[in-house]
Length: 330
Image (tube, rainbow, N blue to C red; front, side, top):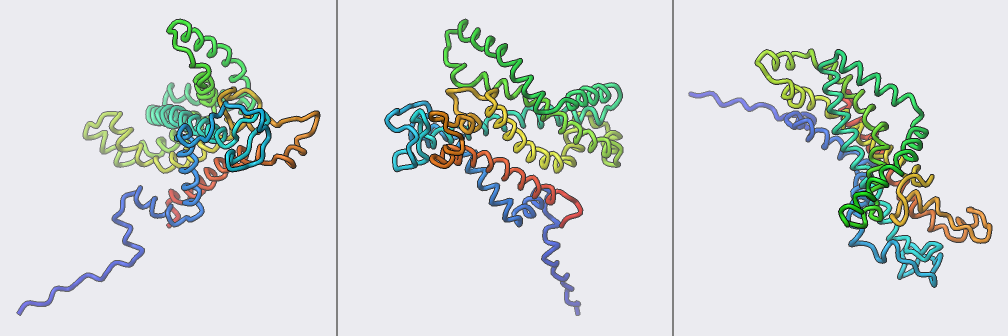
């Protein structure tokens, strides 16, 4: 007579996530944070609105209508018009696109491509290369961020503008300057010192702690190449801190772009920018900005609100990701 099979007890609900991969587990933790999820939805909508600005705009962002200057929000102009009669809703959409493009380009090129690659190499090989990288980064970080950005923007703009105009003259292809290519290239270069070294230092510290671990030594013993060790064995184990740093980097770059444009060193007209829109307070016969805020608050409320959403949502998402990737939290 055979004995009945003994069934294993059902696993507690809290242990059902043990079979998940690290990213699936992190996503399940992140989804439980309602405020962070709400911020993620807002950012997705903002970036989508910026990307599809040519299709969502109700008027051309540069079209002026002097018969409807400083009009209040109405059925034709949802956010009203500015002192030149330009539609604020369309200009906010294009300003959001400007911020979205610059944050994506800067984070991808500076933080991820340059910062992660140099950090992996410096932490793994160490030696003279590590020393040179850290000294150069510390030299760049020793300058005040605002002063360094202003100096680079003011110094590089005439040279980049001259190069682009030379390309226009030699190729006969006009419109590069007007499209804002000069401003995008300039700001991408200007923001590099702010983005690469912080990521490099973070990744380097993680690699220094992992390079002598058992699985890395085992990979060396079986003859794995250095790129395979770096990108297959070490990089996946530092991806959590990288994601957290990138989330804060998006907000920092958005704030820096707004600051430069507010000072007149960022994106130049006719290309809309949220910083330029906030700085372009109409002064009517010597009236103060307070009177404009009282009579036409929409001119500051909508572009300023878009900037605050970028900064606030990325900050909250960064805080949530810090908890999600913290191994001490469950």
